[in-house]
Amino acid sequence: MKIYKSLLLKKFLKNIGKSSSLIFLKNFRFIDSKSKKTKKSESIFFKISKSERYKIILEKINKFKNEETKLKNTKKLKKAKKSESIFFKISKSERYKIILEKINQLKYYIISKGNNKIQKVSISNSFLDTYKKFLFISLEKLNSSQLFGKVFNLPKNKTNKKYDQKIGIAFYSDHNLIIASLVVDLNNNIKVDGLNEIPIPGNVVGDSSVEDTNELANIALDSLTLLDLTNSPLLLVLSSSFFNIHTFNTSDLKQVSQSDSKVQSKSPYLPANTLVDFLRMSDRKISNSLVRTTYANRDFIQSWTDTLEIIDLPIIGLVPAAPHIFDSITSKITEEKTVLLDIESTQTTLLIGSNLAELTSYKLPFGSSLYITNDQNESSNNYFERVTNSVKLILKEINQELPLNIFVMGPGLDALLNKEASLPKGFQRISHLNLANYSYFPKKMQIHEIISKSIDSNIYSMASILTSCV
Image (cartoon, rainbow, N blue to C red; front, side):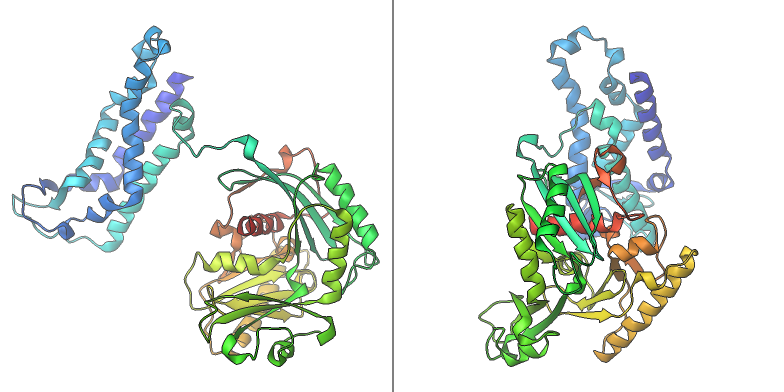
């Protein structure tokens, strides 16, 4: 086994050495920058050598050289033959030495061509970017390789199962209730270790309220007991269609209160049945600071809180699905306007806004169910064509251009497309943004019962929301 892993390692090092990007270095002579009066800005690799990623990679690789010395102090290595040590074979590898030498040269050398005169090298930026990407990707593979991780036992982010926190999430949308058991470790990694999806009839949860709180609580408790969550905190996530969002400048309001006439004017519900939540997006002392206002049907929210009282578990919170994910997206990307679609069965919620700034929601009167046919590609193209037209009309009204990407989430996405299928141009799944570190392997779970064909998009949304809440 050791010989096999050693051969794999040698092959990997050989492939790096043969790369055309590394051969590029052979065409130039390296001159010691300490002996020449040059500006650091003339060095093509100066930026690389100063980057944190380069320092981390270099530090990890240099640990390989010291590992043999550490092992020599152990009784086990004294009894073992050097021929059996993979560290010994690596340290003697010419390919390994060449790679280390080239990496270390980046600290002290600048590229020159010809004799001892330093000249500017005419190389396209795209070529340099390709080289830098190759260098970092290759060395990160060297650092994160499973072979190295197992044989060399490289240090990783330590965790302790004693401090793992088991958390329950209940997600309600389209008359389906998903209850999942998730374990969060010290590094905020999430593991989905159990899941149950239950259909909820209309006489239990209607369109505007929970009709039978006792029955809904019993359904939830059965699932919570099955997943061993009766002593764990619970986060309740309700679909975006139950909420409306608008952003105000505080200078435009007489008071940041539900009783303010402008606040009331944006509510889709009667004043007596309106529940409002305010979130300051900037400093309270600034007169024109922004406040995000979330509207919900008071009876609907009250019926869910009544259900939670019957369940009687510690509650993390009751939150809408899309706003937390929108904030996570805008913290990672920079665009003048960000657009997020939350697709459900009968309607689509559209969120348009910016990072820590204005955010407005819009309801589109159609969802995935209207477009599902036997031809998945046709269903997808028809739905997203109509969505594109709707988004363009709304952006035109607010004098905004269509962004580079429209981000997509929601249970309706699972119904339209499987997770391997690509979206039409101009649309991107939120799962491509790495908003959460999570693992989800249904075949390895003792309990994984679903009624939908796929819930991958929902699982990713739940993990992302939990990451932003804990």
